[in-house]
Image 1 (tube, rainbow, N blue to C red):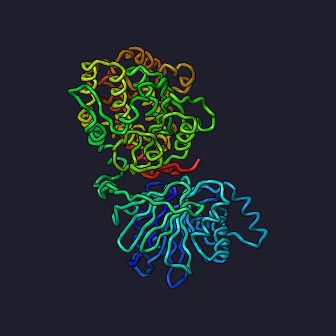
Image 2: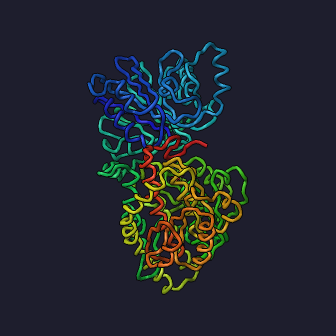
Image 3: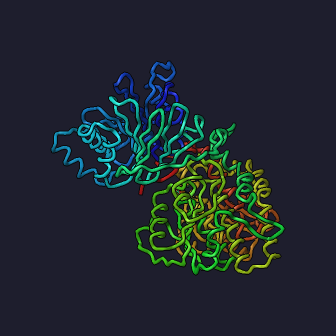
Length: 612
Ligand code: M6R
């Protein structure tokens, strides 16, 4: 989704901002812009399309533009098409202030109507331009930028991560946050503002996270943080541990491929120091203080969006089958508006890679208001969900740059498996049983490594099916969510229509689609329902569907049934999804590559969905 990076200091900010915008490209966007202040005048350049267009328009190669105050933005269109005009930054009526904005001004139409009546003219169709005009009006009245921003925001409904500069006050950047992340990078004689630490981490690791309702007045010498009502807020400085190498491609063609291949390591990282194999137990520091509430919970609710919701579905199998706790799963976007019955003895888990997904964050707040304990399973350290939760467990997958989530998913599943063992042990599971589960979990990184050796075979299967119009993914039990996730990966990056179903549901409708052109991916491990899934395979064969099976290494029967077989090592049923998704990630990846799509930044998608 939209990205922001800004700088105030003594060096030329143009390369800082352009590089920052490049680091934010993964979030998904469709236009980019920059505003600089030089000799008390604005220099603004905005372009539809990629940051490279903007850099070319700026003459980056010649390095002729110099400024020590500026800000840049990547826009993911909501109000108004992606175009040069609609790109940020936007000016006010008198072109005295410039503003970039992530989020949505919900009452922009009412504000615009009033401003039109007062003689304002608007160039584009965005809600942000209206906000820029409103800040400009306030600035005319009070001649103080932080005050102008606070006054304007007191009239705004909606969400924002906002950065404003004024050409006649080149000594400051003013930023404000409500519902859209912003952090201040603290430097030596220079300061930064960004929507994501990756944009500034090569310059400073010291950051201040803005919270909702806060405004920051940033100068070269310091930062003053206040509420919208001008009450000073003291903010702690955090240390970001992100390494630059983690946000670079490291020799891989795409971030997605790099992230798929990182999974032996990231799964291990999710368990490191937490899985106690000899004790048959798990230690999770982020749950220590609320373990009592987890023990007495009558019900667990898992809520999330997209891939994280698929992880939640697998979590439901784990929690119910092993820990024997009643568990419900719900889309966060539905949870927040359904006014669900949430009791104070419910524990609600919010699962999110980014920790910034607007729907998931709102579900958290709703559940909290209703008195439930809210726990995050989050990847991005310091993100909003992580900070607003009562406790939780980080996924520790490292930065995930590819828009299609891969390593975050398997880390989420690993964390859910850890929580399952923890819950089962505190609820009476024997140490011996705990040891058996812990030992098996510890083998998974090596087993993922084994699956990655199937890459060449999977690439050939991808070649065979790259022109397919539709795909069906079928699995049962904990592998039904794997079918959903496999289908989601394929549609996100290859734009092939794909659906996931519980295998047995096929005969209730989707079977009508099966003919010799329909590839059907079966996830068919040798478990208690293997024979049932084989019956479903037979039903597809009878209708000449083309079968790709993800099956266990020692399954000798499957070769007779499937046209293509991808082998995965055996594991316990509820851990199976951690392995079985890997070939499906690779299949989607190689099909997308064969079709020539933009794998890391697929059309219309954003990495972190910070609007409803
Ligand atoms: O950051 P989150 O995990 O909260 O994001 C949720 C979804 O937006 C995300 O999983 C999305 O579905 C991905 N593009 C999946 O690949």
